[in-house]
Image (cartoon, rainbow, N blue to C red):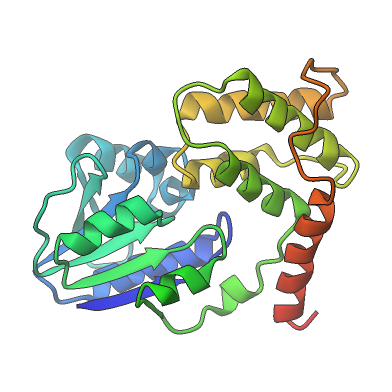
Amino acid sequence: MSRYFVSAYGPDRAALIKCLSWLADGEERGRCVVFAALSQIESSIFAEVVGRKMAKLAVKERKFTLPGSAGRSARVFSDKTLPSDLSGSRVLVPWARDKTVKKVDEARSASILLLEWDGEATRWSNWGYDELGSNPQSRKLKLTITMVALVSLAKAIPAKNLLNSTDRGRCIELFEILTGLQPKLDLNEVRAILTKASWPIADIESVVKIGRDVYSGKHLRRSPQSYWAPNIVEIWQAAVDKNAEAQGE
């Protein structure tokens, strides 16, 4: 079995295109894309890359044509619909999560490629995955404090169907902190990162609304307690600085 990963952080169009090209190039019996949840197909950069119509078809038919592949197609699965045996298949796992990767690994796929979303390549190396070449476009991706903060939020709150009061307070405080660091908020960036963390669409839109309200100057009620570490800004900035150093800035 061949196991690879592509290093990326947040919405990385070039990295996704590279992964889809890898999927199309293989000679294995079958090609599959396994998402943590099918909602990721239409609500992420995936739809922009394969096309909105093709993304809708992928959700409906559980199959789509790979871009630039001369008609080669790939089946679509989620955690819940993944078959127990994918022997002989080449499998792409976009925005890989431990639970999904474990299921794909146990299905005896011939080749697996993971697309990261949180920049933690070391984890996949420890699992026995090798990095698939180098990606110049991905290396040029400059992290912002907003991106790092949103990944922190995605990790702090489990994906579920409804934000509770503590979750909401954590979100409000995060955006309050960010207003002092970033003058503008990219709502599409918020959607993209939380989608890759397999959050339900309803929760994503709730967070987007909180971010929009906080940045517009509205005072949202929350507990006076702090949900984030006192040095959280320093932690986020350290991640940004590490990324810049890796790119030779």
